Amino acid sequence: MNRAGRIVLAVTVLGAFWFCSGLFPPHLIPPPVKNAKTQKPMVALTFDDGPSEYTPKILKVLKKEHVHATFFVVGEEVNEFPALVRQAADEGNEVEDHSWTHPHLVWHGPHFIRTELETTRDAITKATGVRPHFFRPPYGQYHLGIMEIAHSLGLTTVLWSVTGYDWLEPGVARIVQNVTRGLAPGAIILLHDAGGNREQTVEALEQIIPLVEQREFQFVLLRDLFQNS
Image 1: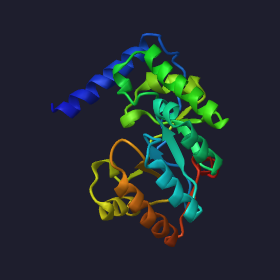
Image 2: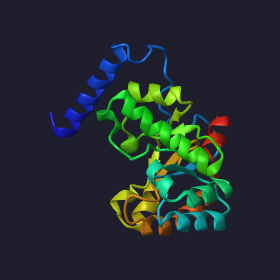
Image 3: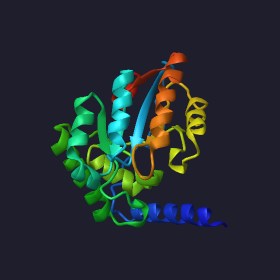
């Protein structure tokens, strides 16, 4: 078994242990959402890991194109750049929970996980005046225990169905291609406004928005995407 396989196995065993040990009530937990079940030509544009120095550039593109997006923010960065978070919300974007320090939550216990999510939720609420409704686990890693904690905090766990792989910095053309070839009604698109040099993301976004709209898809916020599914 390769390293990736061992990690998946370990995470599965850990999650099952927590669930069966009684630490988490054995009621049904909504599964992570990867896309909306709709035939309407709507997609949600999401950004992870910010805010950062690249966030204002992305906000500028969104405002110019009259598009709104959902930002999954890291709590310690919210603490560092509260004005940027407030600006994103004031301009009609959603600001949602992506943990406090962006750790591998699957390797931590319930108290640590709850603190990561709850502290970020409170920081977002303080900065924007709006309590978040969604949580995206760092690295897309989760198990039943993490989902139960998010659920108990009123957060729906959301992943993605389309990614630009922009964190790899593969070049603007490749980011654009990765996003546009995966489009479908109800798609949740993943890009990043932090976590490295995001100049390629900013430049790609300027091409992605008109290309997506040319295919008659409408960009909507996550909450609107789910309400219409």
